Length: 68
View 1 (tube, rainbow, N blue to C red):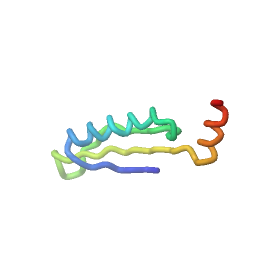
View 2: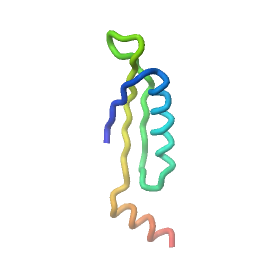
View 3: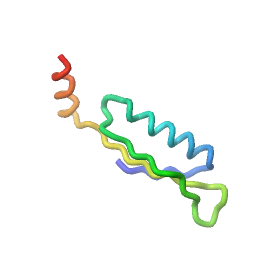
View 4: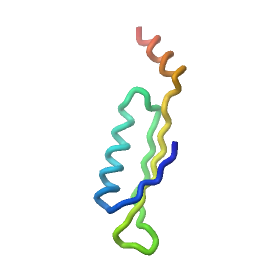
C-alpha cells in the first residue's frame, strides 16, 4: 500500500511517527516513511510518502502456527 500524506509540518511529523510505529504490529511486514517534502507553491504545506506491506492471511497463519 502506498500513501501520500499532505498537511502542515506538525501534521506530517505526527503522520511519520504514527506510520513508523505500525512496524511493531505483528501483521505488518515493513513500513517505509519518507522525509518531509515541501509542497510546490506553498511554504505551509508539506507531504510525506508512506509504503506499508501487510502480511497476507496465509503468512499470518503460518507465523502463528510456528509460534506454537
